[in-house]
Amino acid sequence: MTARRRARNAVRAGSLASIATAGIALINAATAPRVLPSSAATVRAGERITVCIPARDEAERLPDLLRDLLAQRSRSAMTVLVLDDDSSDGTADVARAVVGDDPRFRILAGRTTEPPDAPGMGKSLACLDLGRRALATTDPTVVVFLDADVRLHPDALDAATSVLREHDVAMLCPWPAETAVTTIERVVQPLLSWSWSVTLIVRAANRGRRPSMGVANGQFLVLDAESYRVVGGHECTRFAVADDLTLVRHVRSRGLPTAVAYGGRVATCRMYTDAAQVRAGHAKWLWSQFGGAAGTLAVSAIATAVWVLPPIAMAARGSTRRWGVAGYLAGWVSRIAARRAEGSDDSLARDVVTSALHPLSIAAGSALLASSDRGRRQGTLVWKSRVLATRR
Image 1: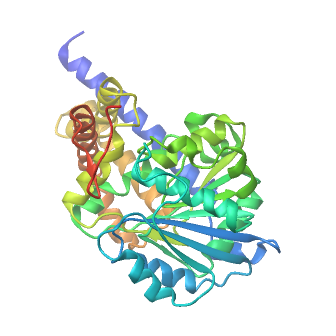
Image 2: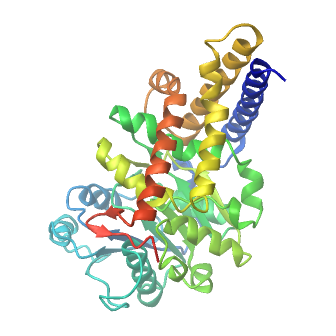
């Protein structure tokens, strides 16, 4: 077989895979569950929601979330626990100033259920402590974990609780719409929901119990309180960098159902604000997803073959070029479909333009993946001034 024919076959294979994944994205856009403000109307009576917020150096972003919680139009009883996890910027004082004397809010100064030098990852230990306190002191029917950079619709908590009950699952992830402002954010952040939107038929994955098909985003997690107690809370995440994925896989391994839903109509999140944050934020956890350097290399190679090679082939001639165009357009469609289903707060026109850069996004994602794995091996990953123990 000539080199030209091998190249043409590689482009065709990549383009066919791109077309197939675009089909999956379109199916999910049409059929995957959504958490909508209207869902709040069906929340059942007697729900008691405890919201847990781990916060380390979040004085700038936490107040907006607290105001959103104060504005909840909830028919459920609500308690909010904010854990100031050894902040250096006055997070606790800022939080107290926002909530005032509202008895539903408790601002907690540090962990109390674990010794200060307890082994484990910072956020995981904070979530472990919060979960224990929630179950021990607030008598919840539902436990919600929120990151400090999330913004909520006034009906978000009741809507998410209603969908949790509607699907009869132990754990629901209402995936927030990822707000992207700078160029690097627009290139990278939409890959988060896109990645599972093109690899899973969401309704089928939600009905299953296979741990590898569990999807979660720690920005917004909703758990049935009794199920959360049964699985041991966040104990399984003690040494996990990606605490959300570790938790959802553990819940499924215990035979309990979980679900992911597009939640951008009730929640948004701007994770990072510049290139340095994007790099450091993704580097801290990407290494944990694919089983080490071999898995990282394999995933990057497959992604390149499916979503980068076809656009490059558009510079060729004949059938190779035609296959390249088809593969590129399919990747573009998959990106648009996933972004709009997520609940993007950008205009359709902006998402169409940004999605045209999908091959660049894949290249950037592969670079971040390689950087993350290198940092893991060298033990140089840091997040919020804490060195991550990735070589244990």
